[in-house]
Image (tube, rainbow, N blue to C red; front, side, top):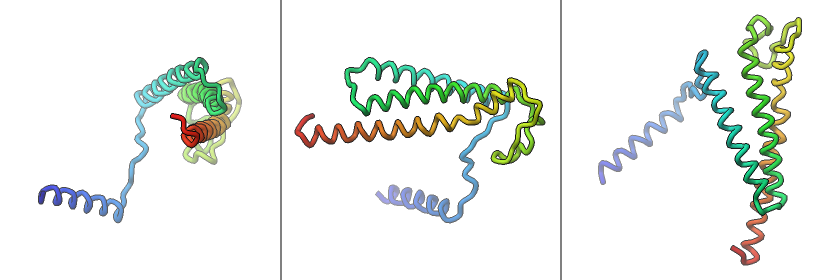
Length: 159
């Protein structure tokens, strides 16, 4: 029992030290070319497959409630977002760094002309948040409707 207490106390001291004296968290682990983009694109492919599966299951389910319909909309928007994001990552690999002015600053960078198909696709895919935000909204609303429908069933004495 004494050893368990000492181990727990040691863990608490280490956690307290990490909170009091923070250092870089290194939450973002960047990989250089080419393995970083390969793994990231593979993750997009797996996410796409899982969204297709979820959408098919939702379409063929017996439940037609509002919550499930919002989840279907979430799946469709996320599928489109995934395609746009995958395309954007692919196009970025074909864009030379000298085509972007101020590339070190994400919010203040500018795409330099002359414009071609690659640059136009790069520009369009930067607006992926216009798909992502509504998709996440539909997810939240759908889960909220499902939560309240289950809560209503429980209050009425159902299973």
